[in-house]
Amino acid sequence: MINFILNDLNISTDLPPTIVLLDFIRKEKMLTGTKEGCREGDCGACTVLLGELVKGTVKYKSVNSCLMPLGDASGKHVVTVEGINQKELSPVQATMVDEGGTQCGFCTPGFVVSMTGYFLNCSNLNTDDAIESLGGNICRCTGYGGIKRAASDSISIFENGKSDNGNHLENLISLKFIPDYFRGIKKRLEKISTNHKSVEKKSNVIISGGTDLYVQRWESLVGSKGNLISQNKKLSGISRIGKQINIGSAATIEEIKTSKLLQKYFPKWNNYLDLFGSLPIRNRATIGGNIVNASPIGDMVNILLALNSTVHLKDGKKKRSILLKNFYKGYKSLDKKKNEIVDKITFLTPSKNSLFNFEKISKRTYLDIASVNSSVYAESKSGKISNIHISAGGVAPIPLYLNNTCNYLKNKTIDTETIRNAAEISLKEISPISDARGSAEYKSLLLRQLFYAHFIKLFPQLVDPEKLL
Ligand SMILES: Cc1cc2nc3c(=O)[nH]c(=O)nc-3n(C[C@H](O)[C@H](O)[C@H](O)COP(=O)(O)OP(=O)(O)OC[C@H]3O[C@@H](n4cnc5c(N)ncnc54)[C@H](O)[C@@H]3O)c2cc1C
Ligand code: FES
Ligand code: FES
Image (cartoon, rainbow, N blue to C red; front, side, top):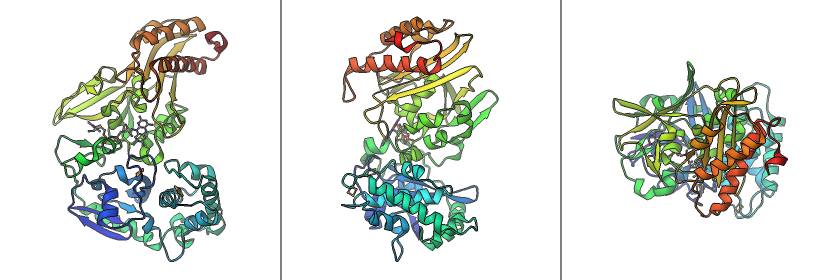
């Protein structure tokens, strides 16, 4: 049985864990406020909140219910727009109406749910963050002006109305942002969690966040015995052990983005991973899924290649490790046996004299896949490169490690001429094809520009942008 709370209702169902949460909500429970738009994680019409007990409190995150297997709701609180409804409109709903933030209304439940999720998760409110939390919601007819004003007005209502008792949940309930049944959710989840048995089953289909699989072939997954691993605590966590950083394969991109440990080593970490999907996608997408999906334009893979990462695989008790740069054999072909699972990813902690940069070009800045992406990790002493790793995505059938370019750059003194020569070598290592994201020539040009951007940003005193072009 899969046990969870849907709004105020306890659910116990023996339906297959691989069916899509959106279908359960709309077709089994007839809660049609949650809309089906693209069914590909792009529009946000299907957004629901997923509440989970974390260290004694309930943490909510927005997710796309169209890409989530029902089994992953196990032990959690799923909130749809109906679960926010009260006798009167909540401040988020009311301000959306008052500010003209809705026209056809198709996108509106998704916006209301995401915005309510922002209030649930954050007590230090500001309009920029509130708007950012709506990054996965698209409106085709209203435009965003009214929706932004609604976010700002809702914050004012909360700030002006809250009492100073310091209890954020109580403030949200008393100001009618959420119904009062939310007060009892923690205790109810504690009971479900203790009764909850893992829905994990042995099968060949490993499903982690589902953000690739449920886009590619959701019909074939429904009813199959998927091995749902995203709740597996043994595959989670981000830690430093000795000189090594360890990331569990089920760590989500949002966990990786907000990791204080990783932010310490990579000052612009947050900015890089802001370019990965939207918040609801990052809340579900995992590092293991990004690696095994083997897309040549995967962003996490691109970053990990430049960190010279190692993939740790396990099959029952058998374990083995392989450098990520040797993991890809051809388009979507991996050095991985059918029953092997990615356990974790490791890389050496960056040294003190190291620099890192990630560049991504896509048709839209946010919520888009890359046309070309590239990362560089470089250690240098007195202007001389002692260690370097560079990756390039979207320019070959596999996520590419630029072996020859790195070999050329090792022990070289960084100057404009060297970087120009290295860029020429990188262009001989790639084999881009023309597709919807651009012609082969365009992608070669992009890679050269991204390559230059790395060195202009990392070594501004040594590389002259004027002379590079
Ligand atoms: C709207 C949208 C936007 C996106 N934006 C981006 C983006 O900006 N950048 C980007 O790189 N990607 C993006 N993606 C793609 C996707 O989110 C990522 O590739 C994500 O990391 C996949 O992880 P997942 O856990 O969802 O994988 P899943 O879909 O669960 O699995 C993907 C593959 O990996 C296998 N797998 C998963 N975990 C393991 C494991 N531990 N061991 C063995 N096999 C495993 C599965 O069997 C499957 O073959 C986007 C997707 C969507 C829908
Ligand atoms: S239906 Fe569009 S994101 Fe789910
Ligand atoms: S109001 Fe119509 S899509 Fe947003």
